[in-house]
Image (cartoon, rainbow, N blue to C red; front, side):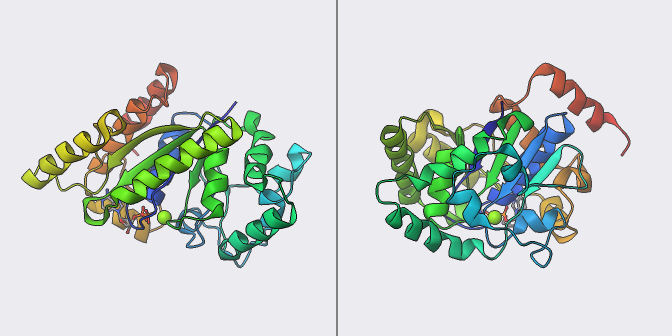
Length: 278
Ligand SMILES: Nc1ncnc2c1ncn2[C@@H]1O[C@H](COP(=O)(O)OP(=O)(O)O)[C@@H](O)[C@H]1O
Ligand SMILES: [Mg+2]
């Protein structure tokens, strides 16, 4: 049974894609079978794994607006990657128009809750993966609502440079509304800071003020600003392949542990990899 985790923040450039990819990679290296779903038409995650929209002809409508009956019809959307234990459901530019299609289909269907179809379709493949990680687009849309409905946990990266309190409050409301509307148990697993410039006075002040604002929801693990992250984006290599010992990789490992995503057996595998020469 897989656990579905969505990275969501309606701001762009806060580290959603970096977090989704890096956490997926850490889990995959540790031996978990991971599916990454890219729902951002900007396709950052898709490009990282070498898939481009020239070769992709994905009928997303089947995934979002039709209740599939067979596992095989959902698996058709998924490709393997060059990285062990990482599969991908790629994004394409067509995702930007899908939002309108979902809206139209919902209206046509009257009271039917198309928002839940992605959840249903992913549930057919739940036994094939330990984790399903969804990288979302920064826009608040039906697509994000479908992703929230399909998720067990929501995690939000925030960045001091581009922070919206109202955006976060509206995300909490959306989760609460969907939980009560559909009797779901989607959990908000926490907020963490990304791209922090070390232990500066500003960082400490912001850390404290976020802690006051969000209490327990604010996670005590932050991801440091790290040149290897932008370099790995430039070379299209996931972070740990580029530099498994960089500060951001260390911080993401701490975050994975804090979120309780890894047991001892898998952590031992990860430790072996980290100690290795390559
Ligand atoms: N810890 C970090 N250190 C340095 N640069 C980072 C870090 N996290 C993200 N970035 C850079 O910030 C930009 C936005 O990150 P990204 O993960 O694409 O955000 P989002 O998906 O929220 O738009 C990218 O260029 C990425 O390389
Ligand atoms: Mg992104």
